[in-house]
Every structure is written in C-alpha cells, then in structure tokens.
Figure 1 (cartoon, rainbow over the protein chains, first blue to last red):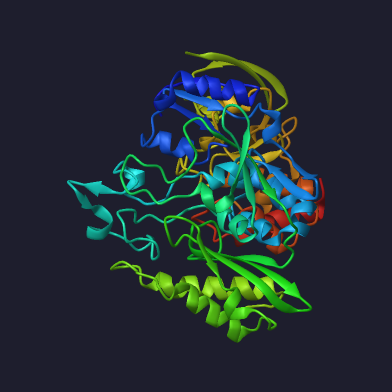
Figure 2 (cartoon, rainbow over the protein chains, first blue to last red):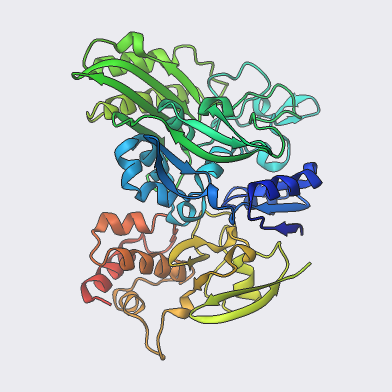
Length: 325
Length: 155
C-alpha cells in the first residue's frame, strides 16, 4: 500500500472540508475491508484517507418518528445483533448475515457495504470499471461467469456487489446524505447508476458527499433475503434476492423483489400484478421469479446465473411469506 | 509521516509510531514482535491474521494500525497466563486441533470471542464462528471438537 496522509475529523462539516482540499486525491474510510484491499492492490492510491470513525451521527441504531434509522458507520455485526432491526426488517439481517466471516462483519459497515466497489476481476486488476483494454471489453473477450445478466446492454458489465442494497431497496428504505451544508434524502435505489463511460461512477453521490444513515420508514416483517453461493461458508453470492411483501389477511397486496449480483445496479422488479389478491404459494413464487428473469441477457459464459437468480428469487419470495422454499 | 498512537495490546499499554499505510498486522508482527498473527491471503478471506479488537475478531491485515488507536488488541500471545495455556489452547493440544499451525492463532481468537459471548455453543454455532477462518489441514472436525471440549470444561 502506498503511503498517504490520514485524518480523523470529528464532524461531517470538517470531513467535507478536508475532502474539498484535495477532491481527486481523497477517499473516505469506513471499516476499510474493501478500500484497504484495493489500496493494497494499487487499484486506488489516494494521497489522503479521511476516516469517518469519529463522527458521532454516523453511528448507532435508533427509532425516530416511527422510522428505523441506522448510522452508515454501524458495523454489520451490530445490524445482525439488533433486535430492533430483526423485528422490523428480517431481509436486512439475513442479507448482512450472508457475509459469513465474523471478522469482516465486525469491521465492515452498513454504508461501506452499500458503497463497496464491484468485484469484477478486470476492475480489481486496474482495467477500470468498464474493464476495457485497447478499446475492447475484456469481459466480453475473457471470463464473464460472475458478470451481469441484466442491464448489461451498455459498456458496464460488472455486477452490483452490495449484499445489503437489495434488502434496502425491497424495503423502500431511504438514504440520508450529507452534502456539505445539510442532509438530503434519496431512495436507496437512487444511490446506484449504470456508468456509460469510464470516468463515470456507479454511484450517484456528488464528490465529497457522505452517506450518513439508512432510514426504514415502515416495518417490513414480511421480508427475506436469499443468496446462492458456491460455498456455504465465506464466499461471494452468485446471485441474491430480497423480497418484501405487503400482506393483507394472508393475501399479497404488494410485492417488491430485488435481485443482487446480477446487474450493474440492484435490480428491482415489481411483481405485485402477478401475485396480488392471493396467498403466496410455490407456484406464484416460481412464476414471479421467472418473470423477473425473463428479459435476462446473459453473456457467453454466465447463462447459468439466470437459473441461479430464479432460485434465489423464488426462495426469497417464499421466505418473505413465511414459507420454506 | 509517522504518527504516534497509544493502544493496549494483550493488556499492556503500548505507544508506537506508525506510518498511516501500516496495517495492524504489520505493526503487531514487525514493530511489536508479536508474530502469532499470520499473513495468509492479505485480503480478508483466510482469517490467519485474526486478532481481537475490543473483544471482537477482525482481520488485522485489513485494519490500519491507526484504526486501532485507543483500542484494546488481543493476539494469541495474550491467551496464556503465567506460562499456562488457556483452556482453549489446552483443548486444541489434547484434541489434535493443530496440524501445521498456520491457522491456529486465528482459530483460537475466533473461538475465544465465541465462548466469551456464548459459553455453551452448538456445533453449528461453532462452525458459524469460525466461518472466517480457513484451515487446509484438519478438515475442521478436530478444531470444532477442540472448541467443544474447551466449552465443556469452562473458563
């Protein structure tokens, strides 16, 4: 890892001010489990690292006006252990628990998971977010088995890596973002964008903006996350799905399904029209999962992910309804 | 530029100067001579570098030394007391939980944290607790049995 200057500001205003002094050379540090790995591999070489560890409003899990608010610097281990989160959004707890290493869960933070960079091996070896060399996509010419199967018509072929984002999008969560003067709110899904050019980001945050907290306006007890991994133990999911149901007298009134690891952004599918008015059963879950994947455009080597994602989606929907998949 | 930090390591106060790009693992091994924590993968997959930070296991290869400022670090060297192995270490010896030994310090610390929170864990809970620690020798069975033996015996 190259050397850098290190700062631990105690306020959001100070952190933003430090960032503005050297915008292109600064990175914010949350838990470090993703950023430090990239710095060790010289993929990112910031001249200044600004730790967010000493800013009190980024921490903690609390209820505020009936909403659940979780600070962005809250470790994933604390999210999993929280009875409040467990009661209000099982999908979120299950998503965090899918990261099987306690060592990573104890350092990695909620905000860091949402803002982690793609696992695309070309990106991780310094070929940029789009994985291009000499004007050609290394993904299309090379190994694409873990890349996107949806939303991949443009130059971005990477898969959104966040474990947490699908659960938050399914649950209708909002993000609170410090923009240097105050806090703005955005829907969780709006954090993500598909870059069209190499210099674009996969996040919609403006330079120097800081993710402060996640806000869940309503309890989402009928929610679940299911991942399919190659190994039961620590491994990246091949595909993941979070489902969130509105149930009225056991019948579906609304159903949001979000696929992870399959597109450059968390992939939201509203499957309400397929499921509404009936109790959720195996047949309905299967139909909704197939519908969610019907427009998939797999690359040469990742057609298998379509089936895997269908399985994750079906299991998540059934689990959200309290049924085993 | 080096920064002076204070922390506690294995119960003792430590004051040391580190450059910002030094990992906690490098500081422990190279500056403090505590070579129990090992560098395996260097990217948070293998758990060989596991230490306890404020009582919780972390991968010290993915933590900056500066992130440990003011905090409590326990390495495998901190488990034995007055020349006596602690009950977990003793159980690993008795059950054959150690083969090449490279993963052992990390396993011991992950298990220490587990037993502190849950003195009587099920086999599943033990396996979950060491899910971040790879072992390429034992097939895990002897390690799980070692942790169960230590749990039965109590602290």
